[in-house]
Amino acid sequence: MIGELSGRVSGYAGLAETIREFKDKDEILCTRLIPRTIQQLKLLKNKQDILAFYQQPPTSGDKKWDALIAGVAVHTWSLAGYPGTPEWTAPLRPLDDWWEPGAFSNRWTFWNMVHTPASLRERKVIFPSQWLDAV
Image 1: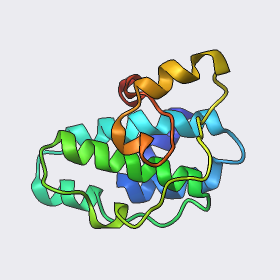
Image 2: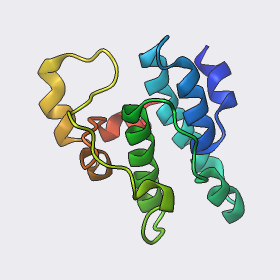
Image 3: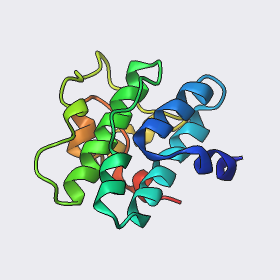
Image 4: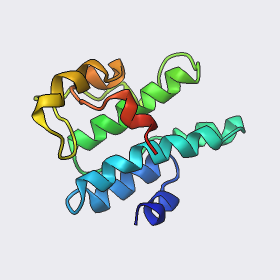
């Protein structure tokens, strides 16, 4: 099923729309879409396509997922060497409480937090960089 869904994802807008549809049905599946989305981004070479990939997404319907998507977008933007951040990522505020998506053991939370990129930590989302690259 992940292959079918990742084919539907086209940029952060497509990711948000797919997460909106599946977040209540399968949170783990939604977390797996994050590295698939980044993989799609890495395949783009044309600057216009890359900028289109970063178009402002609609809300996923959940502040936690919106914070995750924005944090990942800021992270990938900075890795590409672009100045600043995508405009739509700036107005988002940190979550009230720390959130670690998926069914991960609490004993790994501190380790996961330490390895989470700053763009996600500042939004109070725990999502280590290893999960961004896992395919």
